[in-house]
Image (cartoon, rainbow, N blue to C red):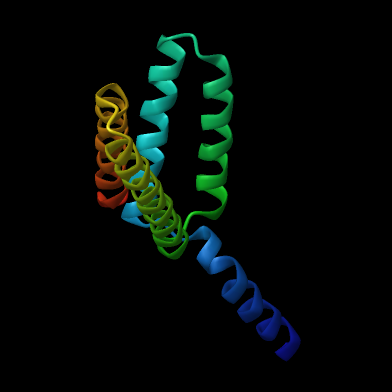
Length: 125
């Protein structure tokens, strides 16, 4: 009888988190991915649909608040690196004095800054 109780307690301890409702952040991320899938299907982007379906499967299997926070931090770090690179490119174009390059590099910097702001948005965007 003791063995049965111990086994039941261990089962509950290890399966409880897996059976728990997903966090609101994970649900928001799942909804975001599902919306992206619908948009990709509407535009016949089959490769993108396949990638998004893999992301959705991973979300359903492994999503935690901690994993989302880690993913967000990584996205922010990458976007910050991109902004820094674009700032260096713009500074180089300004040193060269090429007006066309300056304009193009400024546009790229603006895009990188917009991506950084997007990365900083709360989970589930």
